[in-house]
Structures are given as C-alpha cells and as structure tokens.
Length: 285
Image (cartoon, rainbow, N blue to C red; front, side, top):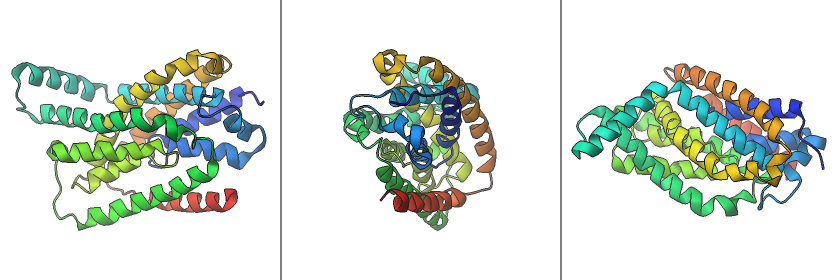
C-alpha cells in the first residue's frame, strides 16, 4: 500500500480548498486527479474498502472540516447576524426583519440535505473510489451549470436573497444533496437552485457559501471518528498539513468568487466540467 506523502497532502489540500467552492466538485477531483496521475497517487484512493473507510477518506474528512472553518472565518459577521436573528425570532416567535428571514431560510435549506445525507451517504460512498463514476457525474455537473444559466436568462425579475421563500429554500437544500455523488458540485447545484428562483449570481453564490458552511462542518464532525480511528492514525500529520493548505486555499477562493460573481456567470465552469468530464469518461471507460 502507498502511504500519503506530505507533498501529496499539500496538493490534495489545495485541490480541496479550491474545488469545494469553485462549482467543479471537490470530491470528483479528489478521485479523478489521483486516477489521472496513476501510480502511488491512484493507490491512495483504491487501497482499502471504501465502504468501511480508508486512510484517504479519513484524510479528506479533515480537509472538509478545514474548508468549513475557512468559510466560517470569512463570513463570521454574517453568521453572528444569523445567530442573533434566530435567537430574536425564536424569542418573539415572529419573523420581522430580512436578517431573520434569511436565517430561517438557511435553517430550512439545511433540513433536506441533512436528512438525505444521513440516509444515503454510506451507500453512495462505494462510488467514491470509482473514477469513471466521478467522470460521469462531473459531466452531468457541467450540464446542470449550463442548464441553470439558460433558465436564469428566462427569469424576468430578480429577487433579493431574503425573498427566496420557504419552498425555494427547501428546494435548494434538496438540490445540494446531489453533491453526495462524487463529481456533482455542492456550490454549483446550490447556485443553480438560487438562479432558477430569480437570485442574481452574486446572491446565489452568497447563499450557497453560507449554506455550505454548516452542512460541510456538520458532515465533517460526524465523520471525525474516522480520522481518530485506525484508518486516520496513519495520516494524522499529513491531515494537519493538508488541512492548513485547504483552509488557506478555501479562504482565498471564496474571496475571489464573491467578487467574480458580481458580474460573471457559471458558463466557464460549465465548459470546464464538460471538457474534463468527457475526457475522463474516455480515459477511464
């Protein structure tokens, strides 16, 4: 079996930090890059039983937690406002401000992805180590991003972030569950869910990142026993190094994307996913 090196930890950590927030799927790239590189890189993913947990999966858990913490740092003011709004709304039993409405929309959106994640995460994990499956889903991700842009152009009105509505928030949360498939981007499908409900690209991205923070953090915390268990013991030092790299990369990525989506679209990411996905399908079919 091939041991995870510090150089590999740095590369995969940077990859995780960027691709978790760029709408191109971090899990998909965590599978496809080692498969493309082959040799000791590919052995990192394929060794062990992906259904029971592997050192690589334990390592990826740490990277996800680091990414969520970076998002928490970037949006700390927003989350303080969200917590205060929830506390006030719960105390008064009313929703009176835009901050309170946004806070409850985030809570509602977390419910479907949380329920579906708990129900289907384990059976879908067996797909994790299969590059062909990741390649197919990456291609589908490109189609989803492109489709979202087409539907957004047909939307005549633009809604504010706190005007998504209960059904819209639940729909966005359900759409995010597609990210359980390696190759489908969490931020990408969440953004598309916001776009088809009339949000601007900037607001759709912000809602996606705000929603991703508790979802990624909760999923990572639930899986921390894997990192603390026998599979994780072999990669603890590498996980620390990779996590630091992932956190820095995630922070820089969200800082860039919040500016990028002020006047840009998902089209370049859709094109990348289609090209990379089809090329990977051909390579691993």
